[in-house]
Image (cartoon, rainbow, N blue to C red):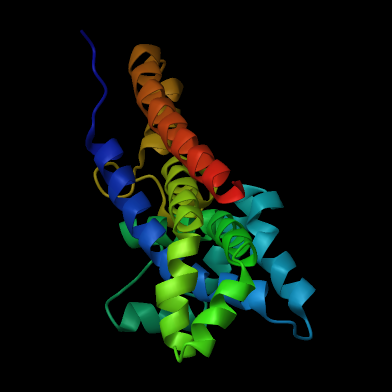
Length: 221
């Protein structure tokens, strides 16, 4: 029986996990800001946040290359620090994070907006600080949205192709993720192995989507 090489799958899982963690850390404050505050330029920030959902992956990859490549100040600084991103697995994490970022922010923002403000006000009248209210009241009520956002983020990062290919390249054993590996298998006419890997990715994505939908329904109830 012909079986696909699982190394790209393990790399994809590692990249997706790190991307989800990165998006969670950076997306949570932005989701809170967009959900709870009005400020000049809010619509612009919202639009820029959602932009990766509608941009072609190659365009998004191009922007990342311009921002992080060796010709950019950031890229040169990262290279000098011994922490290059382009054509490394770390670049794959960044590309997957940018692609999945809107899913986390939009989902968690909806969760924050759905929290009953009266419960927070009651907690404050009982002497709780804003910090305590956030962690003891708001976050427990928002956790289904947080988990749903994390599931969608992981699934999106797991399947990213275009931006990851442009930023991290296609280096077997180093930056070749599962989606890029499937592309290579099809180019080599190794359809059985490509089908097996595609099935694995599809089942994982379907499971994550089901989990996300279940958590979203819980929030709506």
